[in-house]
Length: 285
Image 1 (cartoon, rainbow, N blue to C red):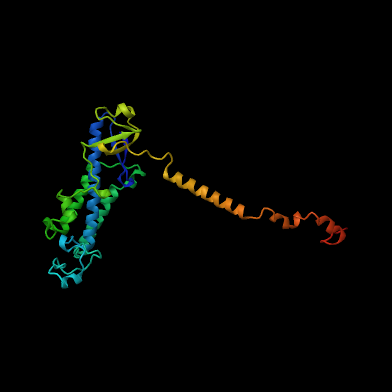
Image 2: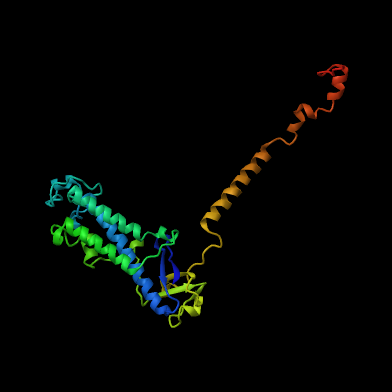
């Protein structure tokens, strides 16, 4: 199976995917788009479940961000959901999380799901699949049902419920909402757009044990920005070396060029002084 390293503008969007060189580029592009979108859904849902476990469901839109003091000047009741026992400092959630043991299940499930699709898995050479993403979405669905059976007392506008019911609103303003349309998505390899009518073998050869780095982005965005010739680690090492060299040069320039003349070994009259008794003298045996 050929290993595809998928990149986008943000490093957190990277992932590995295994496929076959015998497939068409169009089919692979659809698979990568599906994995990309599901991966973002897993991350969004994991984040929502973590907040749900800490501070409970989100408030109605008209009361978000309001403090307790606003009840003195407005009929809005920010604690209509119940007396908060874990207040949200930002005032966006009710502050009424599920019981401690259930909240722990939510947090653990969300943490496992986020780790399963983390971008750092690229360094560990671990690929992700559609089945993997769907498995963790179902796991988080089950954990949510334990805390809120049949979504009871979980508002329809809560992000976690919207994700599980596929009613989420994606504005693309954050890295986790950058969903791709498979019809408008293109792949780039070696600075060239991969033609969807071709097979993968026509581009990278017939060897299945190959790693290919591709960039995925919208068709209307044009060619992706070329990556630097050196990686980040090498760049940091070079910057550290030249900074140290620059500091050493500054120190040499600050030193007096003829300061060595004050040293005893540089005194041209030291031998004469020793002979006439003006110095330490010469011991004769």
